[in-house]
Length: 271
Image (tube, rainbow, N blue to C red):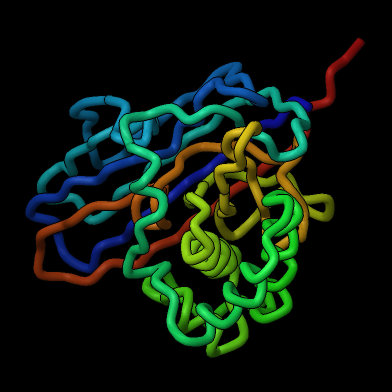
């Protein structure tokens, strides 16, 4: 499948910015299951400082904000050819040792509710793929998909206690439970082509778990499937904070307002 992607993030500041730095993880890589045809980044109100592969092997761009700006716009677009590999990403790459994906973070750390959920599945693990699919179903059964109730600071345990959340929360609960069961897991940020619309409010997030003999295997808890050719993988990390599309800091006296637009559509190839 050939997918066209457009992603724009705009910050409007109430007062001129003195200084700011942003770390961008927006460019997908050509990896197992996808090939980047082209990708462009446009900046308004900022300058590119450097590009590098971070410790998770994500393509990373560091930009500095122009002093005195009141609007920052970051736009990227491109085309990616994808394939359906039944969610199998494959062998591990990057500089992070596997034990790092067993260590809980502040966002994934299980509390009583998550420990009980993991314990019920770990009693008879059997085939790890089967257990992971069962875990995915259990997470969705305990955390109903509902927007507007959680944010980027919501922990996995808080989402389980509340009983609702979004894709980020589902991934964090899955990751935290998998790690509690002794299975390395990580967060993935990317894009998803939806069947009912092109324009979206944000990108998408899911989880990957390490399975012996297969490598990293992806699980989209929110949609109850393993990612197929409708998904574009961009970045990964131990949790959302390490895989977030944009992170950074700004210095100035005012507040800021954020607006994000994402469009993902299939390109029709003319014969």
